[in-house]
Length: 91
Image (tube, rainbow, N blue to C red):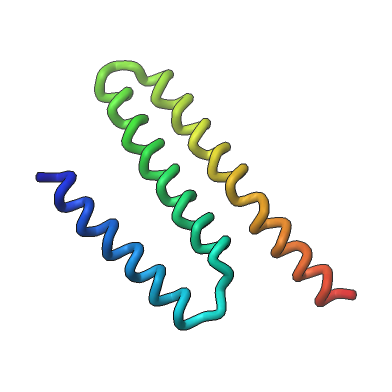
């Protein structure tokens, strides 16, 4: 039941991202990266919570750290593009 409700929310999320992409001239790479970051965050948080509830707190903390590092690695191209844009404005 919970997964069925979650699928409805995920559909709404992707529908909203599609509307944002239609309204603003945003590159599809940025939208897909944003979706990846959201997915990594939810999966890491869910896995960490399960581990902590099962009594494996240290493993849950390691999953949280891995999730944060994964989001940082996935977002690096966007950060570099942002820094490039700022550099062009300053030059």
